[in-house]
Length: 345
Image (cartoon, rainbow, N blue to C red):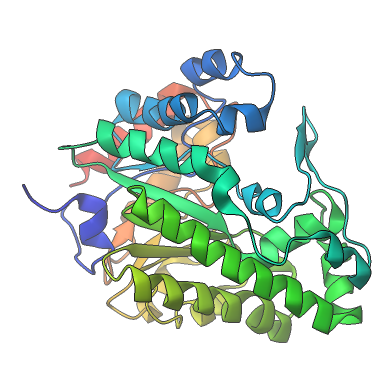
């Protein structure tokens, strides 16, 4: 059996057909997911039910045949493992008791207790078994330390991550302790996901776009490099994708210098052609279709796909969105996307 399409691309091979998967491909736009989700009272109850999390992961594979399945979980499982309470409020997102002063860090565990995340690893094992013999890769993931820290400090998502930015400016030593704690927890969490069956892991740096250059290097790139190097030392066979979501193409190119990263995911604002032209040839680029173009469909989606498919393939390209698929996206638009990508082989 030939190597899986996604694994080939992340090994530096320019494949005749571009591999395709979508961030948040398991989710509310699918009627079968909505039906399944209604069987659990809360989002975290659903995430920590291995059978249901595995089923949600597999639903888009059955329907669309994507080249990768990404485990159904959440980046805020790490704060839970550190002893910080996390809840998800309907229509409002996550809520955590905020860390407002350095003294509040004492409420966290000295090291993450990942035993409570056993259901996540069991879900991965179930999905890997279900995908046995297929050409579908299995992806695990975590949030990058800066992104996770923004939620831990603010206690919720914020428009500009000002609470975390202010904390880092006012209390840099305390903030560095938090980042170091999250680096260690992320390394262990990814390692356990790999042991459970993940062939690829993606690190989501969702809020890199708000930081000045020096802070981007310190709080995003340096922790990412620590995680990647440690995971590769333990699991040299695994492929790693970094997703530094940022509107600045120069920041993306700085991230492209990360050692041992196999792929770099681009958000919608990044210039795919400019990044591909300057990427090390051993690395793949992933993205960066606008989720709103996919939601719109029709001529707008075709124009976006024409642009995407016309991009020079100096390096391997993995088709994906610039961020997660939107809940109101019609299933037919996803089907059209896949037909266009596969017809272009």
